[in-house]
Image (cartoon, rainbow, N blue to C red):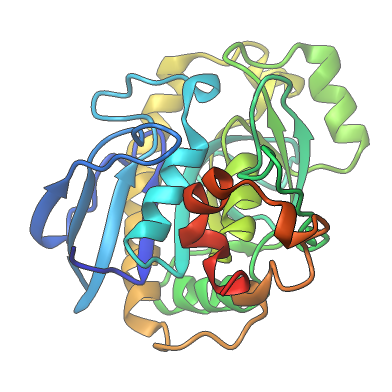
Length: 287
């Protein structure tokens, strides 16, 4: 199977990369089921990349329905070492107006029903998640955004809520009191699973609205979000394209060794089926 070291996950409004050439779809299966959609392999900025529409073609899947494990596992199977993602968010700060782009470096988990780990079934592992995005990749994306002439804020806190309903006004004010910057419904699980899979991860949070705390946005609507997504998705594609062009071939961060000191289970007691299921992720530590 053709390999790609760079993965791209497009969220609401970013269902494909216009500059992607030599495209071919790959329908994949994982031990956790199928990903959201067939992955699209192709060339972007002269590099092999794998693109996945997070919500599937036509935006069929709600955030709580996403098979996050299958999505990240499929990327790992293709040899992906870095993931650039994009997603729509609401702003919790006056200074982050609609059409702004934030690259968060922290997350707060407000989800309730989602599986956020590959582990279990006889194998326990606990990765470090103090810094949930790759700092080197974050720096590179920020530099690439500036090079592309697109303003983007580096650093901030993303509240990941369950959805699919938007926040109550009380919740929105609560998150603001915590000092959070944006709110969305998807990226936390991706970041956790990417870390477990030893893949660098960064997201472009595309601000579509002020959430319901702002007097001008007392009621967030899908129409409001969709209009801003069209323009923001163009900017996101430009940043991603520039980042892919600028990335050095080899990583020098610690993401590729995230599991080195994470296992707590006696390896001799791990069930063979669990080892087989997770071989693409843990195999080098069981050799």
